[in-house]
Amino acid sequence: VELLCFCADEANLPVPYNQGDVIRLHRVKIGEWLGRLQLIGKLGSQPTTKGTARHFPFSFVLFHGEDVAKKGADAVPYKHSSETYYFGDEDK
Image (cartoon, rainbow, N blue to C red; front, side, top):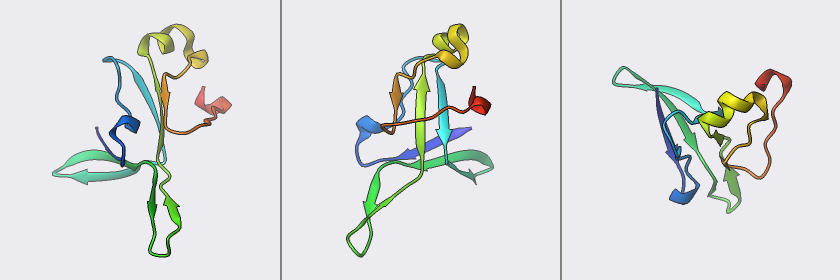
């Protein structure tokens, strides 16, 4: 699976530190290109024709793979796209 992320500031993109890190994606669009599955997300906001900001719904949370293996649902993310995030019982 390929993840395509679009953002005005490259520093805000989800870049895993190590192989095996875990990314949780929220509200990505699923597509296909040349027979390959793609997950597509846009971060931030983009001005509309009326001058108001339109927010894209994609968000992510990144975890160290070793933390997830040791701590499971208690692992703390090292990067996230929004100020707040929530894990319900079904997410753990």
